[in-house]
Amino acid sequence: MDKHQQSQKSKLFKPTHVDPYLAEMPGSSAHCPQCGAVYRQGRWSWQQTVPDDAKSHICPACRRIADNQPAGTLHLAGSYLEAHREEVLGLIHNTEAAEKAQHALERLIEVSEQQGGLRTTTTSRPVIANADCRPKNSYCP
Ligand SMILES: [Zn+2]
Image (tube, rainbow, N blue to C red; front, top):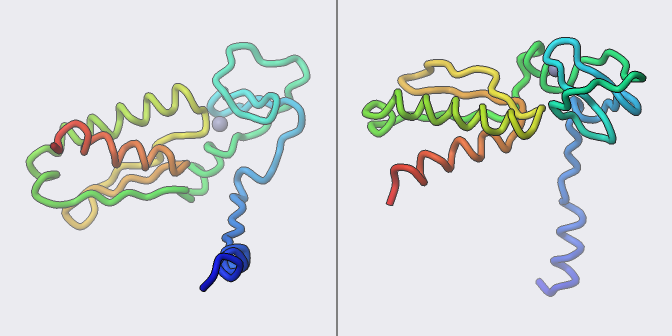
């Protein structure tokens, strides 16, 4: 396959994923009555002041949590988890706190026991990616 064919194939099979929770824009400014996040200039944040013209609008993260529709799921299992369960749980919660502090829509939905392991669901994929990497960085050579 030459470069032209590869380019055409890449365009043809390019995924067109649209997150329905992020597709709905609340207008110029909004305030989430559930978590307090503020929408302004196209993004949600933990801004302290709510603009006077902000309308009430439930943010995408709160809607995902209410609908129990995670954007990411992480399954952890194995002997390492059994030996370090509390430490791994601490890393998951610390990762979520750090991500949530910087990004209003990146949150943990639930951590549950499942099939001898842990099932973690989140409102966004970056939380999963960082939760997956940090234990490796902390414990693996
Ligand atoms: Zn919210």
